[in-house]
Structure formats: structure tokens, C-alpha cells
Length: 330
Image 1 (cartoon, rainbow, N blue to C red):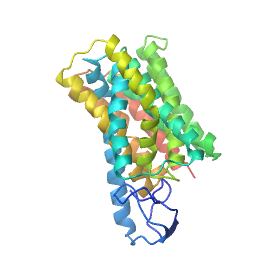
Image 2: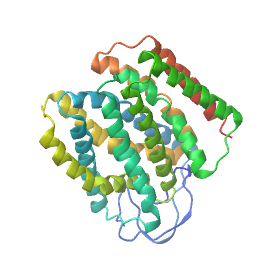
Image 3: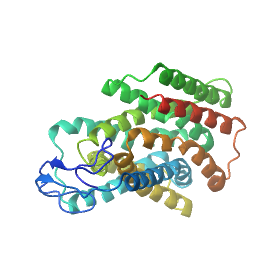
Image 4: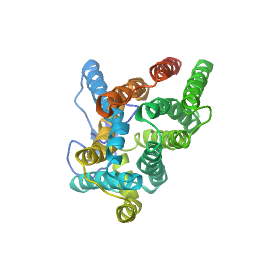
């Protein structure tokens, strides 16, 4: 990943690159000072590569809920959340050290803290707590509202003014999701639904701030520093959780935890941000529309769940609403 990667710069161009002394030469962090000319690449090949990278990110994220269910078979919820973050931070921190990445400027730390609270701690914890009482297929449909929540958060944060069609489709999607959640819980939102809706809000904030920061530093460094920032909390939390919650190291529990740490929490974010840098936020978001449907498939194949009759219809309705919002962005 080059230092001039951003979520809004789809093509390689000549830029005045800021000094990156101390970041090291690697595929993940660029070096050198002054004007740097990047070899031109055809628009088609850049777009194709970006689509493939973003699609890999979506595939990684679609396995997050099933992997969490597996991890919960042998660990408590707090153990799962804290250990996944500690393991991911070990990988991310190692990369930051090996590639000698400079500490971010002071003005970026508030945004990194939001990413930490939303993506590293809030979303994993709230979805893990939700899965103690909700099925993966049910949670997948509710989480299908995340792109809409992220778009709304981005509009508020950046001052963008989407069209009326965008907001109408967003509202319809929200009504579909809330209606599905209420219907499945017997007429009133369950505790799991409350956790899931809270997860949407904090994750949307983390995605919005992470997308903004990716304009100033490579995306892998955004998630890397967010994971490192959380280490004092996650290490202490892991020690307490391991001493108070039951632990049974089954193949499912270990496999689920490892995927959450390295697949969902770090590597998935790396390829996702690189895809965004190549094709832009809007096109990458369209690929994420498939995530709830992929998770529904995984819940059947990996967990043996029976899909609620309304789940596929609700997921498709949300998919259609989000598709309209993407087309109405201009």
C-alpha cells in the first residue's frame, strides 16, 4: 500500500508525497521525500484489482458472525472480544514496527480513537453479546443496515447532501429491518436486537471516521493504530475474562477466534481499504451489499441453522433499498 493511497483516489498519479522517513520500504508503506511519480496503470486493470480486493474484504466480513458463533462454543463473550483484538493487535503492531511506520500526527488521534471505539471494541463486543440470544441469520439481516447507517454518518460528518431518493430508500430499508427484528422477536425488540442496533451505530461511526482518515494515511495503518491504541484495554480485559469465564478449546472455538482476529479484524480491513483506494467508496460500498446474503449462506453451511422464512425476503429488500441509495448518491 502506497503512502498516497486513499479512499477517494482511484488512479495512480504524480503527487507531492509528504516525508515518510522512518516508515520503511515495503508493500504497505512508502518511503522517500519530495515529488514521486508512480508508473501509470491502465484504468481497467486498476478497477479490476480494486474490485477483487474489495470483494475479498466483503467475503472476510461475511464470515464474522459465523466465526463468532463458533468461538462462543468454547469461550465467554468477553474472552472472545478481548482475545481477538489482542491477537489482531499483535499482527498489526508487528507490521507497524517492521515497516518502521511513523506515529500519526496529533490531529489524527481523535479519529483513530473513534475507530478504536467503534470497529475494534464496540462492534465486536455488541455483536458477540447479541449472538448469545440471536441466531446468526437473524443478526445478518439486522447488520444489513450497516451500509445505510454508515452513509448517514458520513453525510453528517462530511456535510454531504444526498438526494431525497437516497433518504427515502434509506428510511424504507430501516423500516424493513426493524419490522423483521420485531416480527422475529415476537412483537417487541429483544435484548439481542438492542445490542445489534447499538452495534450498527458505533460501527458506522468507526467506518465513517476510518474512511476520512484513509485520505491521510494508508488504510491498514488506520486499523493498525486503532488496534494498538486499544491494547491497554484489551490486554487487561483478556486477563480478567480468562480468569472469570469458562474456556473450552475446541476446534470450532479456536478456528473461530483465529478468523476473527486475523481475517475479520485486520486482514479483511487491509484488503477492504485497498479496494476502496482503487475504485472509490461508492463502488466498494455496492460490493458490501452482498454481505448479509453471504452471511445467511454461511449460517446454513457452517452452523446448520434453519433460515427464518422472512430472512431471505428481508435481506433482498434491504439489498434493493441500499442499491437505490448508491445510484442516488449524486
